[in-house]
Length: 329
Image (cartoon, rainbow, N blue to C red; front, side, top):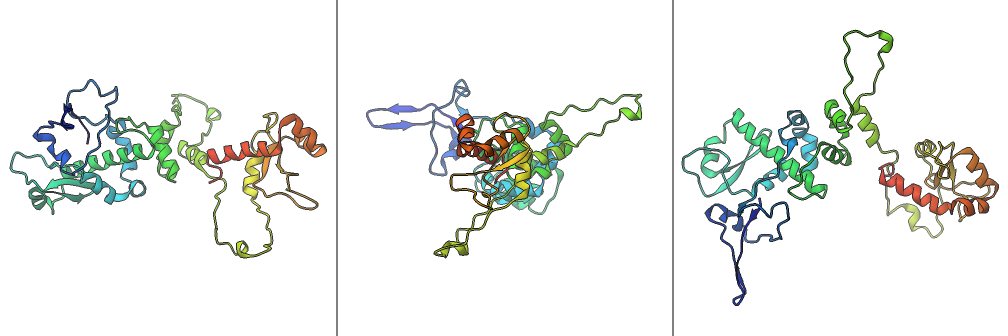
């Protein structure tokens, strides 16, 4: 919750006074508040409680299957995170014109939680109604969108889009949760036109959008770190060559680092202390090259590096790309 207030400044006393009104006093009950300069987007708004940004995903019924998924909720912080988010609200969410207590609590109700005063909590604790479920669902969706937006580094007034939400799910290993219709919308795949009359030979099978999204999000190699490996405690440890056929196959499927044509071979680094008689560099130290440039490199490494650049620079650029697109993780 945020509020836009106009300060009354007393420069001689060094005091700044705010007049939030009785409706906004609950903002100051926590003891400390954050004060920041208003952005241009909210500068024209009147003083008072700022409205929450409009989120189109919040009103998209096709997103409910994702919002209510248990794995998605756990990745965002679980229901305990939802409860902590609701505890910052000092208002009872059960609408009625009777008396409300000044003390508040959080009541769990599928699929989320509800912020209630003590009186309403006593009356509704054992009830299960569609109206309560609607309030709990709205709280769950609002919390998820706010959490995802914050984890992606956006401000509170940012309007979260479907591709951004899908990217958050991919980053958290939830690509398999995205349904087919949302995956097609995120990838901007146009629906195939349905013709009333067509030949069977004209039917072309297409790859499902969800499968395409999972393929794009698939990691080729997962690196693990062992700071206490047995060899690290040895005076003269025996060196082991790191091998990964899956990674070298992926490198072979990329474009040549010299001419940008389809590569034919994953070239292992030579020179620079790597490779030797009957040995090869680690499979991590490879770059994609076409057959012509691969032969040119092995014929004369010095002439190759003078023409196309140092092998270490080419390797650094390729490793940077592999890490940036999630192939190495």
